[in-house]
Amino acid sequence: MTRPRTRVLALANQKGGVGKTTTAINLGTALAAVGERVLIIDLDPQGNASTGLGIEHRERSTFDVLAGQASIMEARVPTHVPRLSIVPATIDLMSFEREAASANGRHYRLRDCLAELIAAEDRDATTTYILIDCPPSLNLLTINALAAADAVLVPLQCEFFALEGLAQLLSTVEEIRVRLNPKLQIHGVVLTMYDQRTSLSDQVVEDVRAVLGDKVYTTVIPRNVRVAESPSHGKPVLLYDYKCSGSQAYIQLASEVIERERRIRAA
Image 1: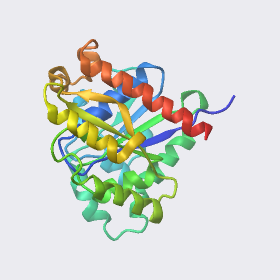
Image 2 (image 1 turned 135 degrees about the horizontal axis):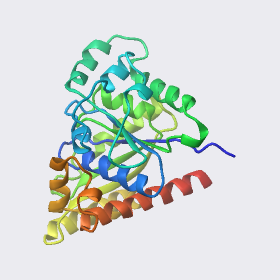
Image 3 (image 1 turned 180 degrees about the vertical axis):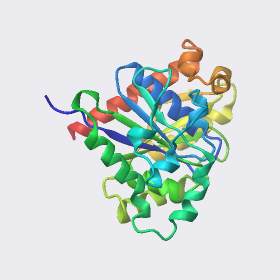
């Protein structure tokens, strides 16, 4: 029996408030719901992915992992979602860049930790998707995520300045691919916070598709009050309100991600 392949996807955009963490939580939940084994790495010092999944007490964190004080196996904690776990973040992550600034191999800390995890897992319990929730900046934490990832998933808000800064992110991804991680690809761009009541949202969707073509997922995540409410209850929206439009959109996005993965494997 062939061991399942672990795929590492970094959710990155240096612009804040675009739905990165919301997408990490709910895409992870949707993937787990269809039988995938999913691990979220919370790499944002704000720790919103951890809080949004109801993880409050954090004995070990991603800082401990990156600092070599704990393995991912020791730091990961289960969530209320079957087959979904998380390595939570704490504010300690803010000191990582300062402490690792001159250290050898500082760009590969996360990559090496993930490699250790994958090598240690049993074949029957292999994590199939690792989603890295990056901070809203192109700092050493984000570089670690991109150096460790197979591909980048970019959440992009349907607003006037949607494309502002995207060119910088794509340039950074290309630089990381050349210098640190030759396998790195753009998995796709997911448009978030779409408001069907405004012509602006439609124009943004049209503009982004015109620029990026089939790199943009067909699924668009709507602006939805249930999606906004769910983190305050420590639940992904799929557990908070399965039937709402936001939940259904993330289920569709998970199907698209899996289909793209099938095409990548077949290529």
